[in-house]
Length: 425
Figure 1 (cartoon, rainbow, N blue to C red):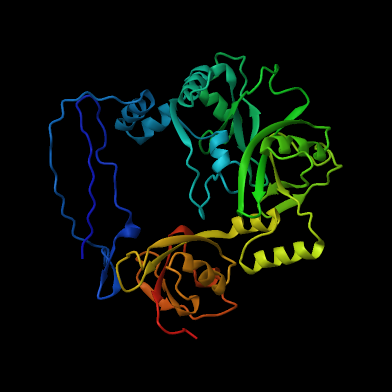
Figure 2: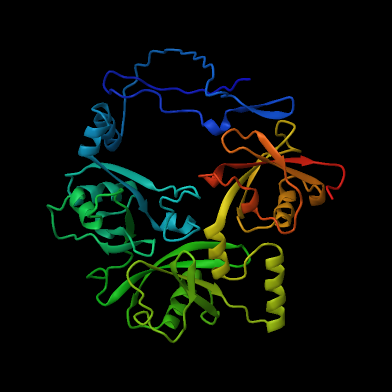
């Protein structure tokens, strides 16, 4: 049994570094032998053969300034790099928010779900905010004067939200000082929201207004995606958002809406149209979700929602947020052969609360339309993906029941499948 991985690296006299940066994921180190998965690493050992080819390259080395700075610091050792450099990562933009499907404005430190793909900036701690802001603005090709950066903070209710814009009137303000103000405990990196000023309004933000982020729950597409930010008066009513939302979504003004507050994971509440933002304790950085309200007869709406639930889908943001809180990625692979067009390797995003039949009813889309009653599944060991036990069909069994209880990262759950000629019941 063997696995092969190729990598390349450029060594130069101008830049000292630590060598190759491409490694093989341990989860992929297994092979099929006699129809069964076998790990490449057994008894904590494996033979590794390395073939190295050295080529002379006279082309000059061109590195971005921030990467060159980080490489130089890394040569001096981790401790020195930590003292001299500050990683200001997870810079959120309106574009990344529009692609984000989950709580808050992005996924931060979530063990059960992949992190958001956000821009990362590595800068000296003593770099001034003005210099850093110019660097960020240049990355996104926006004039400095049109940019405001908001600091994100960890709230008591376990959400991460923009708190306030960084002051623009202090030329001596450093990145380290900003980080210390946002996080006095000095834990974690500096997280920012990249706010683009669309109009000539001054001062910014407008006095008496708060910044609110909007998300649209699309029932038909089963998506919950960001649609940008708005500034609203603290004393205005929730129903005043309807016109703003209709204009943002290019809908007619008479489209009926239901508006919810994303308070924290597990707590999503419907907002009363006549209530004010101040009365709902809405502040800077809060998230409000909306969906189009169905106007058909009550029985028709009930039947439509029931059909969605039978399919394992969701009729409102409250239920969909519950799905987000329990979602996992399950990888499916053919059990007795290498993947091919008729036996593909694929993944599904499912809820740990989904039942066995929900899984089988969704999978035929990926397993070439095979009859769900003729699919047989086998669980695997977490570390090696070696087959463990055949899953027996049970109407009460959920995904959480056959996930390994010692599993730290559910995104690595692997289920093997077989396409049978006979029913499994």
